[in-house]
Amino acid sequence: MAMYPDLKIFIVDDDIFCLSLYEQFLRNLGYTNITSFTAGDDCLQQIKEQPALIFMDYNMEGMNGIEVLKKIKAFDSHIMVYIISGQEISLVAKEALQYGALDYVVKSSLSPEKMTAIMKRVEEYYNPRRPKEGKKSFFDKVKSGLGI
Image (cartoon, rainbow, N blue to C red; front, side, top):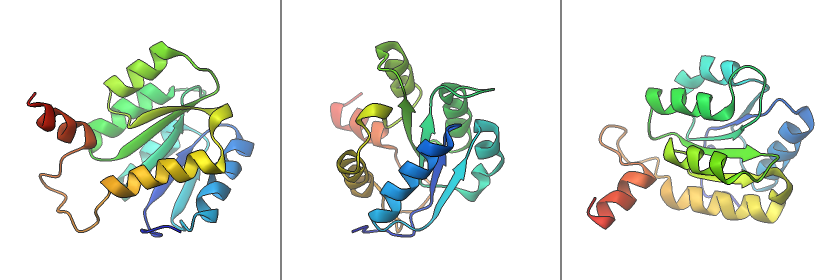
């Protein structure tokens, strides 16, 4: 079960079925602090709530997932974001990682087992006792480890 059940999680997808499915996967793992949005704009309006993690669809009306990702990272580079897409497009995956997404997941591969693996990785990174100021993102840690 969840090591941090109160981890604040946002899910952003214009497909109501997918929103419900991802939320159920997370609740089955023991997470309780989940907020769902059907548009990137709605998520950005609530970003001041400081979610630790956001699962976001790439292909949405209005702003796409990459555009929303850029705004999230401009607000707080430490918010973890997973981009989810219905298509396996390497260019989009590369762009998502370039702008700070933790990973890119194809919708058809997102199962309860995959969600468990994702959340295990998230909890390894997440530390609620770590001070907000000066906290390094996953990619900052990788860069430091590589001496970049």
